[in-house]
Amino acid sequence: MTLAEQFNRSATSSDGDEPITKVSIVISKASLEEIYPGLIMANGARAEGMDANVFFTFFGLDAIHKKRQDHIKVSTVGNPGLHIPTWAGGLPGVSALMTKYMEHQIEALDIPSIPDFIEMISDTGAGVYACLASVDLFKLERDDFVEHVDDIITIGDFYEMSAGGQIIFT
Amino acid sequence: MTIARLAGVDVQLNDEGFFVDPDQWTPEMVPQLAEEWGVPGPLTDQHWEVLNFMRKEYFEKGTGPTVRKLGKSADVSVGVKELYQLFPDGPAKLAARCAGIPKPKGCI
Image 1 (cartoon, rainbow over the protein chains, first blue to last red):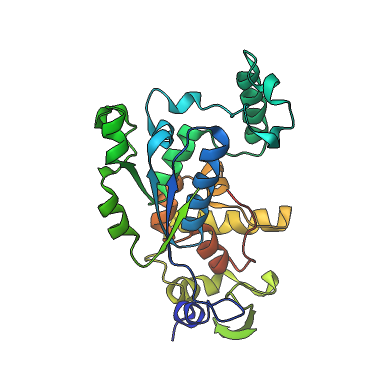
Image 2 (cartoon, rainbow over the protein chains, first blue to last red):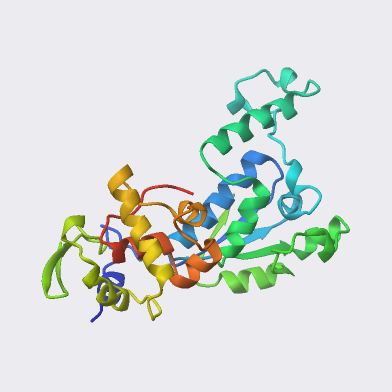
């Protein structure tokens, strides 16, 4: 028996649960703090040797939209985690300022920008998909999306490709 | 703990198959490690660039690099895409096993 066979066989958690071998991650919102976690999870899954698919739906499509993915903002209204008053979050320029601050922090940790991250995830071999219903809803076309998008798929396709794995809605 | 016989030497591996003591590793073990862990052969200079960088980073920083760091390093001539071809299904993890160092820490 090779080491790979030996250790894959024993790659269960301490309480005997089966290891996760595949994840399908859904990103449905367009703010910076709601896009990054899904990207980090997808990249991490591939780094661990799992299969990974990322499915962008609804406003999450902005992350793979050619003209929008470079302008993703932190949500500053109704975001108690920022610890600023909600009324202040709505003032002109606050979202841009907070975004700039967060981007700076992210860069300092050597975390890629959203466009670079999408490219990196595609390079890891993870699938990158857009939701057909949302694409239709927003009257978008294949050309509106970055080249790293593998396909525009239906929810049925999504469930089919997620079979046997975990679905994570971020 | 598992004992594996590599290039005629008994080596201690932890529960995930990583070397317990990186000083037990020798380059002579690499062909066998690569085969045992399913690295598609033959081993190339690019594989060795990755393995040497893994060890260098581990001894300098206390942890091996993540895939992103490997892809950005000037010591490694290939990017993320090629890393997944050289060491499929988790390049940093697989390369760490072949380079005789613990599992790299890092989220990105």
